[in-house]
Length: 159
Image (tube, rainbow, N blue to C red; front, side, top):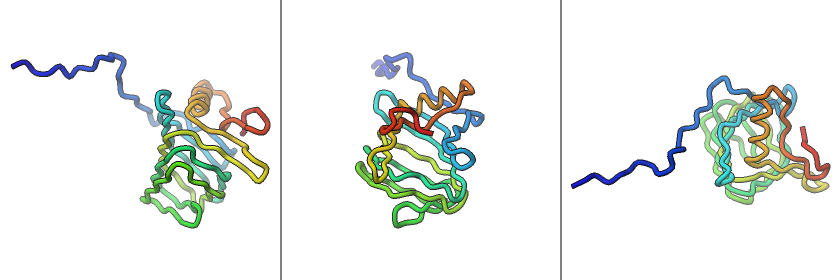
C-alpha cells in the first residue's frame, strides 16, 4: 500500500527565522524598545519582544483581540497586579488597561492576535496592528526612524 502524500501543496512554506542581530526599534527614546519577531497578514496576529527601562509607562489601551504575555526578566505592574519574571498572562479580547508600568528593567514576549488601540481622556490616540509593526520593522532594517503606530487624533505617525 502506498503511503499518503504529505508534501505541502504550497511550495512557499518556510520557517521564519529572526536572528539575534535584528534591530531593536526604539519606541520611546532612552526608555522603551521593541523587536518585531513576526507579523501575519493572513490573520492579523503579531509577535514581538519588548524591552522597557524601569519607570517606563505604557499608555492606556484596549486589546481588540486576545493576547499572551510572558515576562522574561523584570517586573510589570498591569492593572491591579504585578507580573514577575517567569509569569504568563492571558488577556482576553476587549481587555482595558490603564497605564502599564515597568517596576524594574523588563523584557517580555508578547503574542497578540490582532490590533491594540491607545486612548486618553480625550479619546483615541494610537492604533497598532501587524501593518504598523511591519512598517516599523522595515524602516528599522533600512536604518530609518520607526514610529509607534498611527496617531488617530492627529492623522500622523505617533512617536
